[in-house]
Length: 72
Image 1 (cartoon, one colour):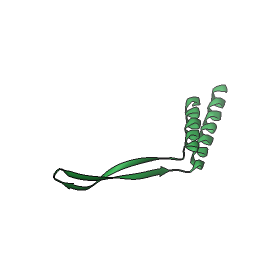
Image 2 (image 1 turned 120 degrees about the vertical axis):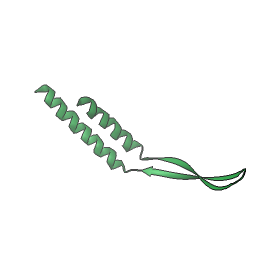
Image 3 (image 1 turned 135 degrees about the horizontal axis):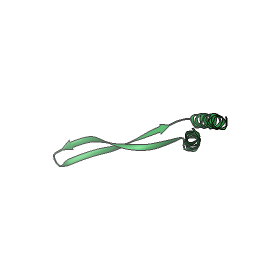
Image 4 (image 1 turned 90 degrees about the horizontal axis):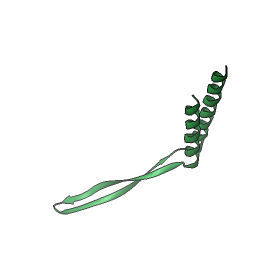
């Protein structure tokens, strides 16, 4: 349980710091014989920093509950 809690805290921290990422897809516009025209379309994936904070809190709770069970 301790490893899961630590992993969730690290993932939550990363989600809080990095609030999204970009990626590009290529779309074929024209394809006539040897002529090919493509367009690169940007896409953005975003999330709120509160999601990262929530995951860090869950990781902290799991870390605390896991340490109480091993001490008992």
